[in-house]
Image (tube, rainbow, N blue to C red; front, side):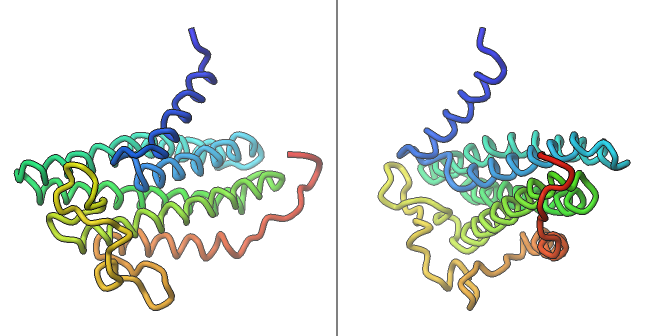
Length: 227
């Protein structure tokens, strides 16, 4: 029987091989969820190794819950997109399926914002020797949030038959590629970053509020020995 570590390596390898394949999914949404899970896992480590902070146990529980939900979202994003592709093929329930391709990345963005807030707490209050790990979790969470928010914007803007995808993929009907969405539809801001969508504005606002504090605390050199 394979050890837990071996099973974990198999799961990670399988996910990466599927993302790297020519299959329609998993793709960027699942990748963003995996990054959220990774960031939350880092925060679990920081919390475990911060026994002097009274809030460490609660922080660990929050990080674990965020990680487990993000792991579920990896699969849910793939299922949502594949369901949309099938709905486009059949012409049945297209709008409801498209809405799911908006709802799942919206939740991924919200989870990333929660991870970002927790990263700031641990960066400030946790073991100073692991401050760099908390800062790394914040960086990962910001990247995942930006990715998920971009997907929400594209899928909101594209219309019932144009959620993310490549038009030349078999069975995708007229589904439009993210690479081919013109700037007016992807709603790119003047600075080159995706503009906010209505569905992700609240999560993005929380993200910015938390990230302001996280960026202000730079990871310092380890104190008191190695991590």
